[in-house]
Image 1 (cartoon, rainbow, N blue to C red):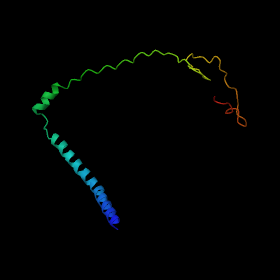
Image 2 (cartoon, one colour):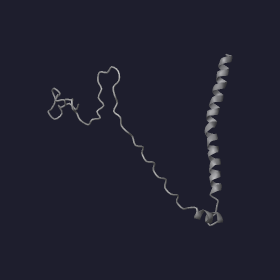
Image 3 (cartoon, rainbow, N blue to C red):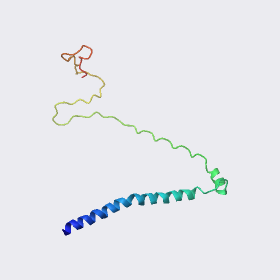
Image 4 (tube, rainbow, N blue to C red):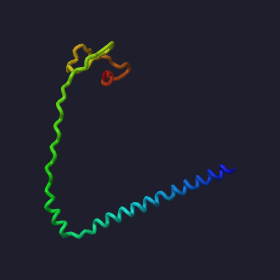
Length: 114
């Protein structure tokens, strides 16, 4: 019986904490809005604005870093392997294009894509 009462109290405390969390967030958001309002109270045409006008020159655009030059080196198969082709020659020498066709299909779509 004591364990059930303890569980009930813990459950009630947890629900109260979850219920108060949105209220705390709303209060924090109101404080943030007040800070922004204080910043907007500056009147136009004050001395600070005149000083800032001279500083509005656009800084030079940063140069885009040049891409590093990459030297390609074809991979070399090492150890025992059954298939090794890097396809870096740009030719299909040694390869046979498939002429297989699907059974029971129209001629237009009967050709395999591979």
